[in-house]
Length: 269
Image 1 (tube, rainbow, N blue to C red):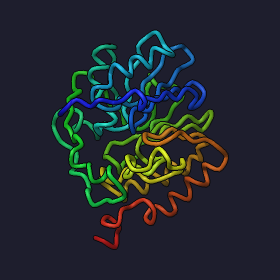
Image 2 (cartoon, one colour; image 1 turned 90 degrees about the horizontal axis):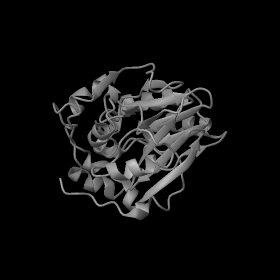
Image 3 (tube, rainbow, N blue to C red; image 1 turned 180 degrees about the horizontal axis):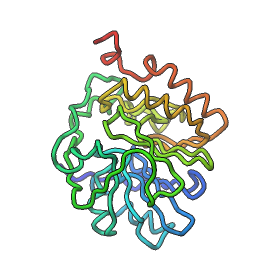
């Protein structure tokens, strides 16, 4: 694919997402650095193609050492594309859920996007987005649910729907949720139209690339049961507050109405 030039004004550090969590927005997607009590840190997701140097420069602001690993919420191009270059330069493993393996080892592409999802330019442009496969096999390590030693204090929660092996991460100590694309705090289908002016609020997963809406609904309901007080999404601004649990429960309750595009609603089948 052609090189993606990300302007400097679209590289936005987010220094206080939560205690010991730093964030970086690159164009329309977020990555996060989780700093641990022993001084090590973990990179969550790896953003767009050709952004590895931007990510390294950002990481040097809060750590002089490489991360202990790169951990992926899933393997879509906007969450994984710098992973191989970063893992090779840092000499670290890349972790992902076992159900993402075909898409991260050069075996399969993700399903074609739903161009008819509607809502704005992101949906219309979705056929142009890379669908993989990317090959991380030499660096790849696998998990299912539970925990990994590189991410102490965090639960790995399988939240399929957007992709088969999508995961989110939850820290019970402060009820912080790194949600990936299980849901967003901006309407991702219209990012290029209005994301910079939209109020931060809960929305469903990016509709153009969500492959299983029934599973996506159940994943949001499962995350709502955690009653998170801090949400760090893959798309949109981080949110915090005592109202968040109720807002996420409302999204789960109204998921079919507000998240599923018309051409994927049960009545359209």
